[in-house]
Length: 116
Image (cartoon, rainbow, N blue to C red):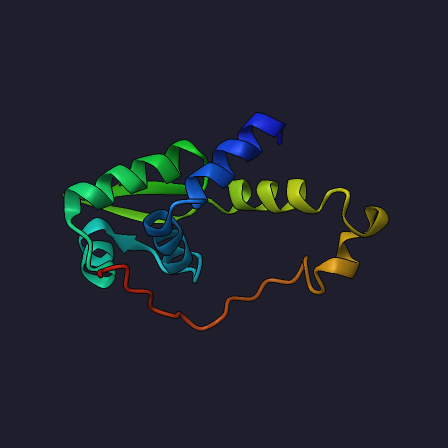
């Protein structure tokens, strides 16, 4: 991952609503836009804008099934970002900073409401 790509991804996550969307999807769930909007208490047009930005940054991907579009985390994109962020960590040994970096684990879903 190049510096500009990492900056784009970090910029996409630096907005509270997009971070909430990403955190909901990183649980491993595959959700349609309607489910995301309901879960996050966000208007659909606003959500659509945020989904587009996360997708453009390579952090989420979509898949059409009939009339529905389902979203999920783009694992390779997220991994690249994490590798970039930890590349020089702990004198070149990122496993010291992030125990279990290579392990597959998903924490239980934690719901985040962005409605004020």
